[in-house]
Amino acid sequence: MRRVAWAMCLVVLVAVALPGCGRFRRPGFTGPKQPTGYPTPTDRPEKASLQWGPETAKVRVIGFFYISKDPKYQRLMRIFQNLAEKYPGKVYVRYWDMRTKEGVNTRGKVVGAEAGVGLLVNGESEIMIEGDQPHKADFNQDMGRFWTEEDLEAAVAQAVARAYPK
Image (cartoon, rainbow, N blue to C red; front, side, top):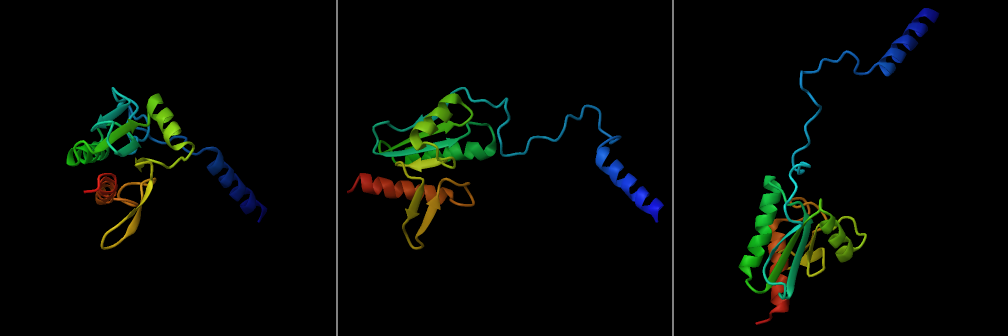
């Protein structure tokens, strides 16, 4: 009985002390690849922000994301640009890159220490979307799960209607 207990202890000790020893690695393998959806460190933007529309517009959309070649962020940049083009002269859009010092500092000035903010429409990050099925869009969270492109378009349309009554 003592030999079995001693052998079990030895097996546990070896299993804990030597993980990964002797594991085969391909030549040139440097570790797991960076998960998709995040820009690589070498994918740094030339500018800290992109902007569309006049700065004097009454409706302001400010986003804090990444300026990247990643398709996810390319799509988001096109959405922002389309908002300014859809309401010429009425909507100002600024898209800040969160990897730049300017982007981080601007976010700190605009929203303070609120960590989750990614998008603001006229200073608001949670907006009640009116319509057939009223609901709250939480622009602090991920696009696709907590808000959609249609939610952003509706929020901007509501802000334009309030700022520029007919």
